[in-house]
Length: 424
Image (cartoon, rainbow, N blue to C red; front, side, top):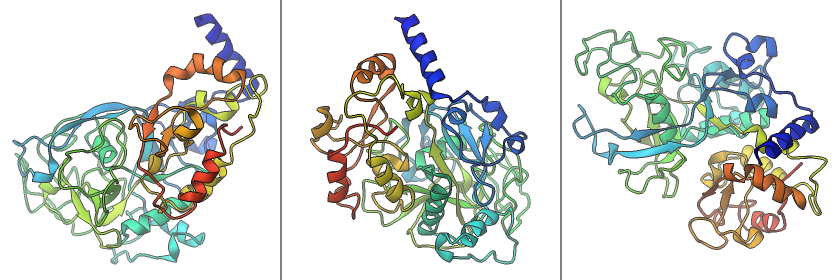
């Protein structure tokens, strides 16, 4: 069985015509040789943790690959300056590696979006501190979503805001202390109001403005300024407790009336205890201020699940025409992620209902929308590829999208119910 699977995988590689590219070729310092551009399926699958890539020359942020893992979200009751909304502590599992911005989105990147006709034409004030490599400020959650939509359209990839769980995961970077470097903080490590102290740290510099995004040291995951400089918007609605929060995949918690969105990380004007990994802030989605910014993320697709990899010649069973759902999803969710925000967390996946597949989502709700991380072709290919890689796939139940405006309402349901095959 093992030999057969290995042979099948080898044939897949030959047929696909896509040679593997080492993830190291995308790492920092080598991006210039490759050139900025959307990653191919082979390049994407070859990425390793801490590899860096950028998918367009102007306006695209540098992204770093973050490993899968498990962490404890929230703070213990014994932590200095702990707030009530930082609990209860709970284990969150990040099942797959994903990519996140090495830095907060900069003025350079935002201004490129505006110059290209995106971001609603909005040019935020820089408060006289300078633009360039400083983090963009005076942007609301709604503004951040316009940049994400523009970026997705530019690259053909489903970029999104970071979820709150992902933001704490990358902030901690495998540690359990209030800051990734330890239990105290100094103004040589982050940008905040250094007139105040936390833990055993002493007073330091109060800069009274933002600093360039590559200031200070990167954390163990390769991210800069996860503590301080600017508060960063996340996708999540604000809840005053973690009771009922998602724990299985790090996805955004949006099943709520979203009057306010969560921000993380602290900023240049805040006290040192506000920069703790567990600390949370919230504002309405249209709120703009000179301490608010954001960074972006996107999922990474394993090569074994890319459409060109799955026996494009040998396993094309009856009725294996490409899915129209891909164009529907790309057109509406990637370019306007304000529609049906909670579904699939903005990642490019295929939606199927119980009516199509005969398989109920884990929630047990009949035609409720689901996110599927399984790809397989019609006819014989379903059986063979299902044996080879079926155990790798997973179901991910999500919220019902039927209440959102078309096409993610009745129109989308009509299209989806007519579609079973994944695209070529």
